[in-house]
Image 1 (tube, protein in one colour):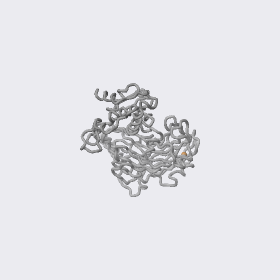
Image 2 (cartoon, rainbow, N blue to C red):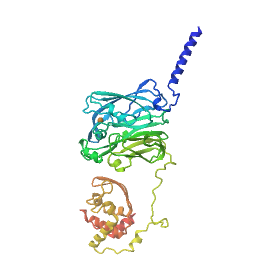
Image 3 (tube, protein in one colour):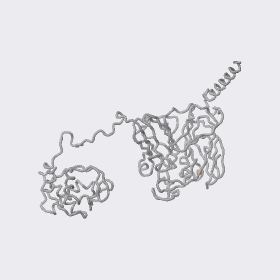
Image 4 (cartoon, helix red, strand yellow):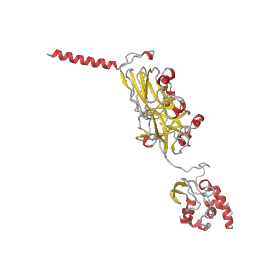
Length: 482
Ligand code: CU
């Protein structure tokens, strides 16, 4: 009675063996168009910044992609609304992951609530219009076409319906990856980022629902340049993350429509870049150029913790138009790679031969004291314009959020001795002036007692201050009380 059992187990084992063989590549094809497909599967599509699981070593398949076009209102930045046209409901559109030799059966679905016809041009397609001609689809319809992926790489797709620039400007772009046979090298984390420029009737920050501005787009004068469709899509709680020691692969595209991207991560060097998303690999790259309608695969290991800022290094775009993201890395510090601040030393431009600052007593010998209030005001103004003006400004108005005002200053007028002490010794730390907090550093000023008396007399008798007169004796008293 053992024989039937043996046969049963043998046939199960044989079946398992054959099945596992079928999922492994046995033959390398000279012409990728000859790669046969085994069975079919539905493509996993993901919203940015995430990507589908790797194709890796799986065999080429008939891959069914169902992409739905949605026209939907969203937020471009705080208080600014925009009518986005999207592939899959997001900007950029859903990430499509294939492997070389896949036969992609593409279903382009135009939601019945949409107002316009659209189509898709995939740069991974070899064929007229990259699929655009076969995929022009009216609202409430679905178009189907298929193509074989014969060139590995990272490719942009976009709408190509007239006016093409407007469809792209409204967010109709995304990335499709064609993995080479055998897959890409394994990494710990992969993310999907795509830059785009937006053109609105109102200026940057103007609130409300902002329509697309054709003239600004033609002139390439973008109001917003952003990663993943909106200002802040990759900052704060939306930042991409990693742990020290992990390897990262960024799939970065540029939808345009108008601008090229100088993609850079502040404080990180790209170990490897698949230039323009192709086979050419550049190593140790600081900034990689991503053309409009192009992409790059960027790989690096994160070695130290911290927040690394992703920018378009055309830098006003980053800090004024939105092209800024964050990669937050957690883990142990490595002081060999990056020390952090070690010291804050005194810098002496005269060189190390001068060991100590000159004392105010040494300065005093060279000057003539003021003989009257008018002279005090005159000398005081001169000293102010040489010493204090850069921070506190010509009219004592200060610099908002940086240097406190001296004009009509409650802090100044409340305590003369304190003011003298600050000029003598400097001041660090938070103070409140006229209800506003300031937290900056004022260094001790190299002024004699006479000069301090003059400059404070000038300040107290200007800009609606308390009209106190400060004498040399008052300065000396504060100096000696220390
Ligand atoms: Cu379109």
